[in-house]
Image 1 (tube, helix red, strand yellow):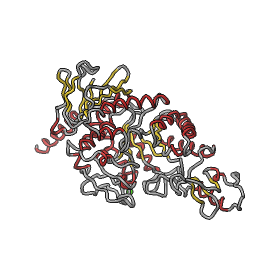
Image 2 (tube, protein in one colour):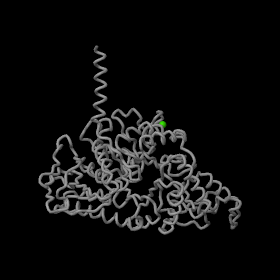
Image 3 (cartoon, helix red, strand yellow):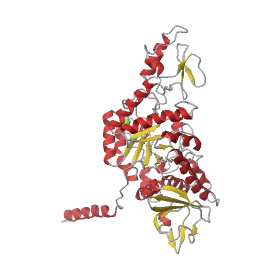
Image 4 (cartoon, protein in one colour):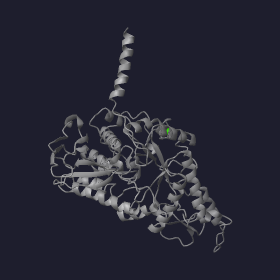
Length: 523
Ligand code: CA
């Protein structure tokens, strides 16, 4: 009898969890997504060797899906000489530290089952100096007599890179010869000649290999250095690549790294690429961080909303179909929990600003639990903090990582705390997913009397939805009478400490009350 009762109770619990587990949201299957950037090495170790791996990431797909992400960007996974793998030795395989191609195919299948697209880092500004193309070219050059010119008919790889006998800025010497090669980042990363048709053919074949396997697109590394110093040539190279990929795979998603100003990024959009990371808004000196740092100054909120509108229209001038790619931090920048310290409220609010922008928002792994890390690159790529006891799946730190002090709890603890950064991110992504217009609407800044209030009008189809954010530490009573927001109703809200402030977002007779750093969706 007791067993029967337990069984009935268990069945009821399952039913009620399904019923109460939040409404099912259908997110459009397009390229406006919410991406999670993963450094596989520091994410989840499945076999206990201390190095995160592809099967480990596959095991955590449920976690990623529950957070609400529908895209992941994998930092390089191909064989490489370095821990970060931004120097590829073989474009057709998976680094053995991370697993096998079969492991990767399982990851793709499992991700797609969950509605998660997978894009991978495509690094072709340079190869590794240990790539067979480069090694063959150097071996051949060493056989030449002084003054003898190389013959590409003998060794085609001498024209894959930029070799000369003069050297110059950004050049390294070919050991044991009087030749130099362009290596803008480091001698271990020789730059490819992307104007060589044979190199382009190689890169087209590589794109085919991964896209036909089911990869959903690429993050293009270092597009600004394809031809260092020439935006017009870089745009030409990017146009060739975009055309090639989109002809064969119209749904593929391409996002480029162009770490530069608004003007340069705008020029790069002429290539027709879907997205370029929005550096003017990201990083510690970007607008997303600076507006939060200036919280409560009575003007920055309003000017942020206006800036959103200006930047979007500028990007659309060169590519009307562009999908903005905002982010707060990535593997090259310090982590945001450091920049927006000391208060957890500001960290959360910065996260919301990023996640409520139009386009595809990117979140760097660990950002959702307020991980810290700055200074040396290794510090920015610390092991994901799964649990307080540091056991299951935790990876070893990257080689030479410094002492990175963490302030916030590990994931297991944050999951149990309604006020945690984790739960705030989860709620923010849920709002992003619930209203397709947040990612897809065109943005317009609305200025109210109080300059701490950010109002972003999102026009999507015939409808206008307003995202209203209180960029201050004070509770605000905002009169909407006589503004275009008059008569709107609160549809969703997001507060930094729901355990104490639940229900404090309200609308009474066109007066909207927002707690410190409160956010709401109204229409
Ligand atoms: Ca491992």
